[in-house]
Image (tube, rainbow, N blue to C red; front, top):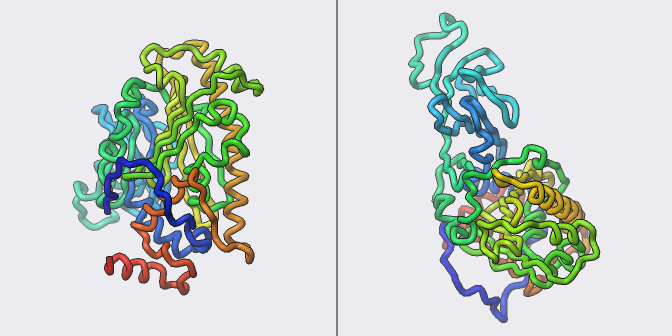
Length: 401
């Protein structure tokens, strides 16, 4: 279901300021529906092509009870497969990243596959009936490479290509030469928090809390921060740097030491641009680096947050220092956001919880929720449906539209 394009970013004078119902943040049945309709049917970021430097280099992604594998072949081509042996379903590679030599060897029984996913060898072949090896290769996944970033999709759906979804940002990010940027291993992070994944999105989709909760960001761009309503599967937020001196060490020195990046426009040189992609991914385009972060739901009340950064291939000493400082600002912000996420998620189970009231500065939360409701209209119900009925009711509501 595609969202109608809307170029009018003005907030209406009258709009529904209530958010999702409280039960949406702890229902395991809804979580299973989200796994199917959101995380299996929408593009998921695995990594960047420059992580796969050699033949046999691979990356993996586990999400929504699916296991993805992206690997570089001997021919230099990058391919995506289910990380699932055709024999007994074992993982064929174990780690999040690594390198196979000339073949992929299943650690369970030793079935082997070529770097192109083809079946090469069946251990103790004589103990099996005659089988067509050509039909026993790894099962391929839909894959798309967008400006060097590798995405996979586990199930067919009507979601447009990543290129189409993110097209609105092309003119703003083309100067970064993203295909040439280098992933920074030491910047990669992953953490489990005991919240529903939507609570993370709710915090991230509005800047109303910046002044109160994020002293670093307030001094970095403060009143020069703007959130645009969520539209067409994307969100856009911009923070233009303050010109007045900062009291915080990291912000003060970041703005002082950040060198000019000749290939960037003056506009890009003086801001942080955030580009979000439904349902669970955000890129940050900074003068010194490009960052990303995403949520991987484990259950209705547990979520993995992960992210990392990419540097310029010709990074200077001053740029490296600036990247360190922007990372420090981001780490402080992430800790502050986690606290807010936990508090807001906890509240949904309280006997005193009666919903939320959104400010005009939180219109991005409302428009994101609207997109969720289009896919899962059951979220329009304030009272939690009876156990075992959520999927059935959701299907009935979709069919009645």
